[in-house]
Length: 478
Image (cartoon, rainbow, N blue to C red; front, side, top):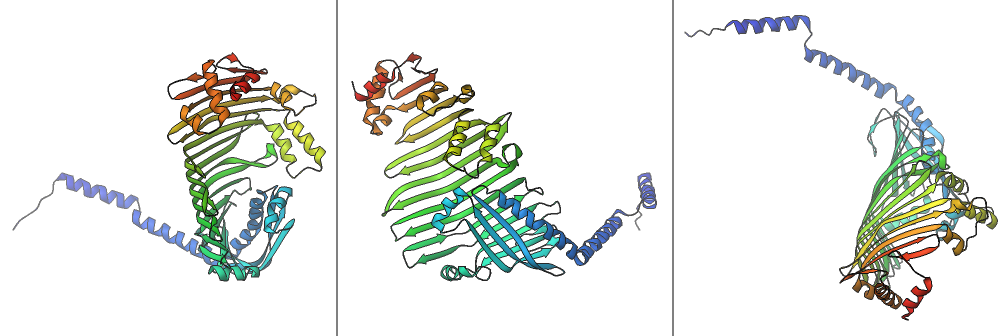
């Protein structure tokens, strides 16, 4: 027989265990009870409260959608409203009406679409609102409710023929989730389709997915999405092809500039190509566009950066293209222009607005303009400072001489010598070598370097004053 003995350490552990059990309830038991209570509360909320959540969702959905529609001003104003709600315990249905009112610029853009100044469509019982708090469907989550709308032949009978040709049930599906904080998330899905118009025009669409978020007060928004592919071919010889276009950005309304939207956005596109008569007209590969607007002190600041691995115009191919631009404009002047954004009453009003804009200081900086052509590089930087504020209250003439007196500029550029010859501009091929001989531009074995400034009406190259007549003579080869 074997006996096992335990020392004083075992006795101490047993005593500690007994003390803990006496003084504190078992943790596992507490967790189970808390989970049970929470589950009962959630179950009751999902069974008893959906009508309450649905009523709150109905009161918030319309203003959130209209806040999004206002963001397209002044080109177009989108308005949405709901009628004839049929409310149930877990969901509701309603008739939705969408109206688009085009401004002056919007009407001009709408002419090819054969639209009048306004366009309205009413879709009976088209929208289904699922009541919260737990939401399932196209948008999953928790909130007051989520609405779903399918744009099909039932809601818009005029689409019947197109849907039959394309072979899809709905041209688009929209879903909107209203959060507990009052904001809204809107999802848009356009399915892939392919259609042809009597063999003349063919459309190949690989689908689009987009999401828009709107803050509770409608002053902030965020959007992202993907256009997977779009191809349009006319009579088989001309067409447009866009491959995988993605975007993401956020913006907010700025009261100081007439409720204009400021923010940033990034757009990337894998490939764009345009052809005409069976020949390539334009091609762009691996492009990226970054844009941002903000307020810095009393100035509105805009920045843009565009890059592309390859650009091709007909037979001319440019590689490693980059353009980086920044501009500033006074906030007070931008606000005045925003007030006139709905259009001018007459030509006199437009002239007054232009003169007013020219009475401000405007700066433009091209941080980088670079490209390569057949392995021959070009690079440039440009600063322009227009001091329209020096006009004071005097009338502003729009002729070149008047504007030039209050403008200063600085240019730095370098280019491969063979690129100058490849450009095929005879005046340029004579100008730069002539300027190099006079010491007005720098020159190395393979490159020209240009440094030019314009200030107080005087043009200088490499610090030397130059008369425009001399440049004209050099371009003429004399």
